[in-house]
Structures are given as C-alpha cells and as structure tokens.
Image (cartoon, rainbow, N blue to C red):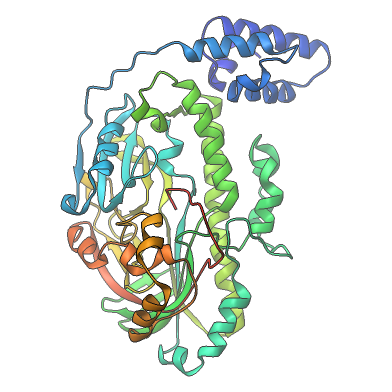
Length: 473
C-alpha cells in the first residue's frame, strides 16, 4: 500500500496521507490484512468525527476534519451548455438547480425535461454529463428506479370480466411499504452476485436486500393492470407487438433500502471531499472515478440496477404465474442511473435523474398517474437532450399540500367515473398532484415517438399511514 492507493480512496494529499500510511504499517505489523486496513481507513475517511476520540485513529481523524473545514476555492462561474424542454411548466427552483449543476468544474453538458421539479442536487427530470466523475445525488436516492410493462396476448375486456381474480392476484403478489419485506424471501440469481460479498458497503445490506427482493416500496411506486392501445407496432425481445388493444401490467419501483443506503453513504464521502462547495452546490458533490470511493459507488450502482430489474422481474413473474396469461412482449427501462456514453466523440458520465433513456430506436415507458394515461415511446436520439426524455408527468405540488387539499371520497368517485379502481394508495399520489401528462408529451415531441397509450384500470400502491417522505419520492 502506498500514497497513490490512499489518493484513489479519496484521501487529501498532504499530512493525512503520511498519518494513514504509518497507521497502515503498524496494522500490517500486527497481522492485519490489506483489505482490513483499507476498510478501516475508508471508514475514518467517510466519518472522521466518529473516530475523533479513538485512541488509535484520533490523529488521522483530527487532520481530516481540519482539512475539510478549510475553505476550498472552486471555479463555479462558467456554465456548460444546456437546454430546457417545457420551460413554462417548470418551477424556478428546478431551473436554478440545473444551472448550479452545469457550473460544476466536472460538468460538460446538461438538459432539463418537461416533467422536472425540485429535488436534492440535480432536479428530478435533470440530465447531466460529466467528465470522469459521478454525482450520487445526480443519480438519486432510489438508484435504478425503473419501469416494466408486460403486454399480454389477451384482450383488455378480460380484466372487467374477471376483476376479482385480478384484485386477488395484486393483493397476494405485491408487497408495499418503506420498511416492508416478504416473510419468505424470493429467489433470483441477482442475489448470487459475488459483489454482495466483495463490496465493502453492499455486503452490509445483502440480508435486507434479499428480504425486500420483489417488493415495491412506497411513494409513487405502483403495480397496476390496464389497457394498452398500440397505435404503432413495435418489436420487443419477446417478439412483435402489432397494433391493437391489449391487457397489460405496469410497475414502477427501484432498489429499495439498498439503493438508498448506497446513495447516502457515498454522498457523505463526496460532500466531505468537497466541503468547500457553497451551500447551493453541496448536494452536487462528486466522486472522481479514479478514486476508490468513486469506483466503489459505480460498482454498487450497477449492482443496484441489476437488483431493481430483478425486483420487477419477480413481481411480473408472480402475477403471470397467478393469472396464467400468455405474454406478448415486455418493455422496461431505468430512470435514476448514470451511464458511460459518447457525447461529441468523448466518453462522459451521463446522469439521468428522473429521465428516460431516449437514444434513437430505444423503447421506454413514461407513466402518467393513477388516473391518467402513460405511454410507450421510442427515442429519437436528440443529442441536445443527451438522448433523454421525461420519466413521467412530474409533481406539481408537495405531498404535504396534497394531504391538505384532497379528500379520498371525492377522488375515488372521480376515478370510478373513469373506470379506475384503486386498491390502496396515498392521498399524495392522486392525479391532481401531477402535471398534465399530455402537455409533458407535447413539450417533448421532438425527443420521442409515441407508440402506445396505457390507461390504468386496477391500481395498487402503498396505502399504509405515512407521515414523512423523502422529497425525491
């Protein structure tokens, strides 16, 4: 182990490196392995205040705290180019957040989608391309939040004919709630991924991840049956989907507590490594991918992506098995993730926080609300948008305001008039909480081609009492 290893871990150059190397040498002499030593040094770097009174590591902790409390100078007056779609529908705070993001020294280009609203760091609906750096809060706390649409080779009227059968299937094969998990863990090859044991942070959350495998969480996550009206035929991995009307199943959820813990752990490291950033920029702190911390986050993010995909696969497999309906095709996509992509001939890290990948020919799903249509789309590959599109209708009011303004009995009556039944949900997810999805789609007509419309008919969301929410739900 040498100073370069510590620099890659995220240690600041200078006195802290010397102290850490001496501690490492002492630990080696005592028989500790390099992996054990790096784990401890990583923990001290992540939270030096926790080690401020430790008899062995307090000197290193004190030096790290001193360095972080020193003001750092950042050049934040140069704007990378960016473009906004649907500007008239976007709150000023979200625009301001994007303008902060494109002023980072690692930023190369940005874009804002018409469903955008304020979040932490990068706004939801924000897209940001950076050079050799990943920003955990530009991915989001629900890493790899994802859509999956299963199209059945079955007419939509079967839902009305056998409504009770579909209700029972949803109730028995879904699990909602922020802390909820299956009493009997589901099985999927994703849990055999060696990274669960090899990754220094992921291994701490394997057990809870396994318990929550195949569950949906809370907030705006849902599982619903509805009618898919295909206007333009398209191809899926399972085969062609001709024009026509079909019964379909749509789900929205992410990487559950595992993704949340990864996001917050590495955001703390990023913020401490860039403690001199002004207040408005602190949640945009980045990790260089050459650092060990940056490489660790990237690996964990990829694992969270595979895990989120497995969650959806299990939910859909359970419902397909319960209903025994033939599957015609499947469309799915992440919308809280970062990708290595070529932009103007150079490889950049493209963050899409609440934005749908929309490269030319790529299929995606953009949902509306429990009462409004969603859409299957095909990307047009617009470079100015960083090959991206909206990920939904986008919130237009806070959850707290929704609880004050709406009454469930009134909402349910209006939904019933539209032929929609909600099995469970929060009042903060009713249709009027969201922007008009058709206005959002109109504002990005140059970004995606609409292939099909999905109308929800039987909806299940988290209906447990909830008193606090993460602002990015």
